[in-house]
Amino acid sequence: MLKAVSNALKLPDLRRKMIFTFVILVLFRLAAHVPVPGIDAVALRNLFAANQLLGLLDMFSGGAMSNFSVMAMGVYPYITASIIIQLLQPLIPALNELSKEGEAGRNKLNQYMMLVTIPLAALQAYSQSTLLARAGALTNFGISRASWLPTVSTIATLTAGTMFAIWLGELIDAQGIGNGMWLIIYSGIVSEIPGNVGQLILNNPIGLLFFAALTIITIGAIVIMQEGQRRIPVQYAKRVRGTKIYGGQSTHIPLQINSAGMVPLIFAVSIMLLPGVLASYLVSSNVSWVASAAQFVSRLFDSEGTIYWVLYFLLVVGFTYFYTEMIFEQQNLAEMLQRQGGFVPGIRPGRKTADYLSGVLRRITFAGALFLGIIAILPFVTRGVMGTGQMLVTSTGLLIVVGVVLDTMKQLEAQLLMRHYEGFIKK
Image (cartoon, rainbow, N blue to C red; front, side, top):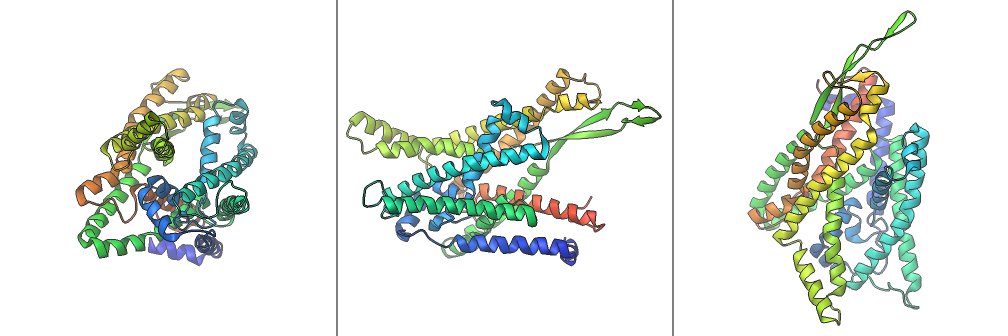
């Protein structure tokens, strides 16, 4: 691997891409430390310690939300917008047709994602700022006549910060190496490791060894599950055109064990935390039965309770199946194979092939869904064993980190092989 990195640095264009990516990430980290005016640092720290949703959003902001900087929302609104557009494609024929029109269609979909991102960013900026203001962590924010100007400026600043983060990610996509949006998130997750190590050394030195071993084991499991696939053999029929013979070769369809990625975790945690957030606004209601119901919901969906984590696990498994099935239906592999003259040996083309592929995908997705569920509840398990849920890197964060590293290595691998160099991945 060191030789491959050395080879990459020797090539001027690859060296420029790597340096450019590093500079953009440094620029993002600097911007992530510019706070929004009116923040109470102590109250903000206490709020983050008690709210798991803010911790998740902090991870997707690249660590910028824990200081409530101008980049506090990071690229999370864009990720939400992209998921919304993906979910709408099977429901809206026009979007479904755009997804099949190649580069031009993808560019148009990206424009729609940007248009959806702006109102989502403004709405998220208002909701997060309201939450911080109610907790006493943000001053001069509200809808009163005296505070409307600071409110508008805070929302505008946070929305602009999101668009700036998206722009930085697109710069990496265009002129750097790796996936820009996820690299920005990756940089924030990795930047928290030294602080977590320091806290564990001071508070729980033995726990540091335990979490270091757990992190290594988790990384190995993530690599296996992310790279694991079932290869379905495909044979192409021979076709004669004039004096030339086309087709006749054999290949395979790689069905990923975990083709849903991070999306089920995002869906599940959003749904699990929504009832608790809504209940927190009704706990102090003057109507007794409303206040009692809100208190019951708050206890039921408390992230410290066992019921919360059981429901979380089940939702992650369910959403893994749902999202995988949806993406598979959009790909329409059976129809594509039939058009190209391909077939799975022993399976009749058309509907039979579609049913066969769906059956195989559901069986292997069970392992992927179970794995994502375990990753989701790992902090709860470690808290039961070690008395603390603090890890060197959260299990969800590790999933992102490993995925980003693997994707970046594959891109470098492809660049090196194009130039006849030995890459990272040994065959």
